Length: 357
Image (cartoon, rainbow, N blue to C red; front, side, top):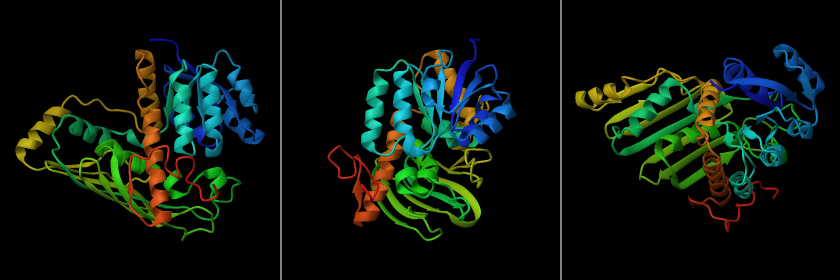
């Protein structure tokens, strides 16, 4: 077993969750050696909690640390692009929270830097990780599901004014979007993870729950490249929080549980069309080995890929697909028309989907 990868976490808000779930439970794989945050009180609180001595407010100081292998960017969305590019140019592996950047142009710039970099970039999509979703994905990858028919996706959460009592949340300039960007992006990634690319999309967005700039309610209809139809809704005004996915294929129907922040966890309902399909599914899953959930699973997968010299388990191309979908949502909502994907560089929203732009 190689020595643990040495990690610097930048941003101690969601960064603390990366430590708690992703790094601390896997000391044979990772060791957090430095923390960076502009809020000294928060920096000291998290550093004291985990016994991390090295504490800095200067991101350049992190890049200059020769003993840091991985820079984990957990700062507000508008800062991601320059930090990711700087860390890649410094020769580091990079983990970055969603959204990776704020436009398709930005993600293409990041991908261009990544192609010439020594390190690997892994965007965060931790909702893929859990035994329920991974078993369903294995059935799909084995070709047992048959033709796709329809899917539904729900992100029904609750966020109040207290959540938005923050200098960067709820604002186009700093959060880059609303429920589409910071909440439903997880479920939408899972839809494309299971069903492939989107060909056409129609969406409506509204700000109904909170007094904020960005949207907090969404409904949409998608046509996938494989012909399947998808409906999706998201709100931050639900009284009971759930995330739910349901996929109907020719040979099997999958349905997730309702856990809002870990929909990949078991149990998933797997309903085969016949005893013969059930037997084939049982055979495919007979040697399934449990995977870690959420950040634990994604970081463990990242470690395995780094050791093997393979691409990250979640790539910048995955992040681009998610941001292309976000771009289509905002374009459709503002124009009142269906939007066809993929979105090219000559699209009016290629450089930004934000209204202010």
